[in-house]
Image (cartoon, rainbow over all chains, first blue to last red; front, side, top):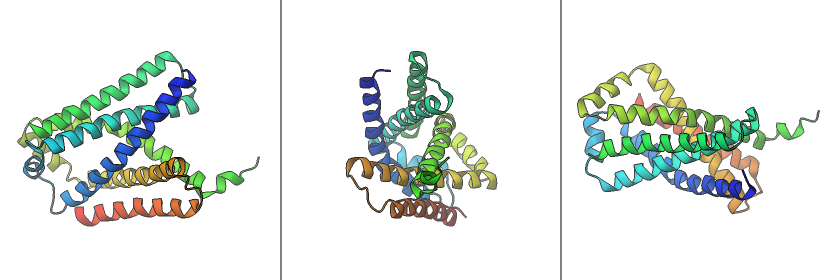
Length: 112
Length: 113
C-alpha cells in the first residue's frame, strides 16, 4: 500500500480509537451494572427496544470496532506473518465490513 | 543482544495492548454473530443468557472484561502520547492502565457473583 494509503489507515485507526474510547467506557459500565442480580432478556430488551439512542450508539460502536479490529489484525499479520499486498488488504477490508455488519445486525435486533 | 528496552514497562504495555487487541479482534465477530442470532426473539435470547450462566462462561467473560479494559486504558495512553505529547511519567501511566484493567475485572466479578 502507498504511504498515503497507510496514512489514511493510521487516521482511521485513531478516529475509531477515539469513538471506541467512549463506546468501551459506556459498554463496560453498562455490563458491570447490568449483571447485578443476573441478566435477563426482558431487562436487556426493555432498555434497547425502540430506543434510537441505543441503536445509534451500538451501530456506531459496531462499525468503529469492526474497522479498528481489522486494521489491527492487518498490522499484526503484516509484521509477524509477512502477509501483505492488495489481495490481503481487500481481505482485511472484507473482514472489517463483515464484522461491522454482524454488529449492526445485532444492534438492529436489539432495537426492533 | 541488548534486551534493555524490553525490560521497560512500556514494552510490557505494548505486548499487553497487542495480545489483548488480537484476542478481542478474534472474539468480536463471534460476539456479534452470536448476539445477532440470539436476539431473534426474547425467548431465544433468554435461552442464550441461561446458557451463559455457566461458570466457565462467566470466567471467560471476566477475562474478556479485563482484556477490554486493558486495551481501553492502554489505548488511551497511546492516544495521550501521540496527540497530547504526554511523554513523561510513562511508568505511572502503564501502572494506572494495569490498575484500571484489574479494577474492571474485579467490579465485574463482584457484581456477577
